[in-house]
Amino acid sequence: MTHPRDGGGATTRRLGVSRGLGLAGSLALVALIVFWPAVDGPFFSDDAQYLSTNPWVTGEAPLRPLEILDPRGEPVIFLSNYAPVNLLLHVAAWRTFGDDVRGHHLLNILLHAVAAALLAPLLVRRGVSPLVSAGCAAWFLVHPANVEVAAWASQLKTTSSMVFALAALLLIERRALPSALLFGLALLCKPTAGFALAAAAAWAFVRYRRGESDLRKELPALLCWTTVFALFAVAEFVAFQQATSYVKPIHADLLVRLSSSVAIFGHYLAMGTVSFGVSAFHSPPPVLSPWDPWFVIGAAGLVVIAGRAVLTLVRSREEAGFWIWALAAFVPVAQIFPFPFPMADRYLYPMLPGLMGGAVLALVPLRRLLPPTQLPLARVIGLVALVGVTAAFGVRSHARARLFARPILLEAEAARNYPDGIHGYLNRARRAVQQGQHDLAVVALRGAAESGFQDVDLLMTDAGFVPLHGDSGFQRVVNDIARRWIARLESSEQPTQSELHTLAVLNRLVGADARALDAARRGLEMGGPFDSNLREYVRILER
Image (cartoon, rainbow, N blue to C red; front, side, top):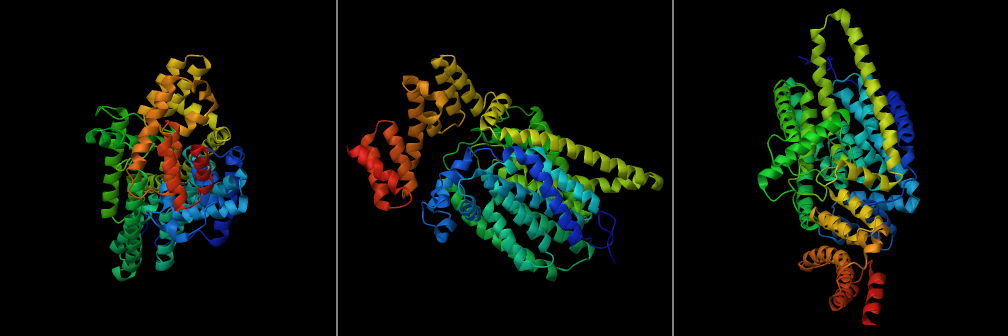
């Protein structure tokens, strides 16, 4: 007996090679048009650490694959992130484009288009019509929350991870080992790709319940994927503990942290559905009340989506896999382990296809409520609405892409949206400096530090803060931040050369020249990509 799919067909549908290639080409063209304003934008923020000042990428450090794969290796500590395949992709991109920022931006934009193109056949296989699937792919492509991923060069990890994960999901039913390899590559680009295992398991269960497959067919692939995920999880846990041990949680109280995580999910629902609240450098405040509107929205959303996932799974509907996908993609960014920025547009990226696929398939049964004569009109109205929303998103995303051409505009946006966040404090400090109110500027910088700001280098090099360099209050703020870093680095039993280099810089900054010289000598004896910098420090400090 055959079981009808959610979309109404009795058999698995395919998009077709020619249609797929045509859709991919069209999406690539649209992506270039929408995100073109960001192509000439400079490297900024994380781009420096991942690209322009990363010695493993620029070639200053020897490329040792085993060192890059080691979750305790120096590249992981330097990046505060375990993503070895992503690092190798950056190496290949740098060898191709060098420091020409346009090449790196174009690569990321086109990978985002590939991810959107792969999403369409996956939706078709799960029962969505080809036309609606193509519309959903376009919607995902131009969603305003995805501008950050497409227009930020260092987000290559996010786009490449999604491409590998979607390709793995498309292959799992036919090619177990190649799909497991692709899944592993997705994880080694970014751990949020774990959603693919949850979705694949849900769909395998649905096929088994429908009688479309048996366990002998499904289990080998799932066991391969589970083994890959388990091996990665061990490495990721080791790396994450090292890389982010210094990050403070959003609040000391566990209940407040859990409430804040639920509220963050509420933010993502608003951003995902109508793009409300997209922003650079999110700094949401902790949730201190159960009546906080974002907590209420998040709690209701979690209950509805989890309930819908269970209901559709029990009823053997493809829809279940997408809701489980969305929930699984949220777990890594739910602040169970704290990040420097607890919320970001880019964290929504892997959740969006799950939310979209679940919503589209949830609407399918509603057509049974309409008389057959009204179905064509309902389809037309639905497609027109999808096209209209997609077009509106495209216009907004094109405008947002311009912000990435001038990072100062992104910082201003963050300051407007989160006046009590890190960039809000930094913006107030810059304005106070311009007005000659140095005391107020120092107060604002102290507020930024208390909110989690730790970038000493920015304070010392940003032109907006240069007038403060002789101010004793400013120096105390710098010293406080530097000493927190020094304490963390000195607690390391086996510091890497990059950590010793940082120790030398920070100790010299706070006037501890003897400690700075000791750290520089130890780093120089160790040998590595920072030899030239450390040699210069030793020469200056010995003088």
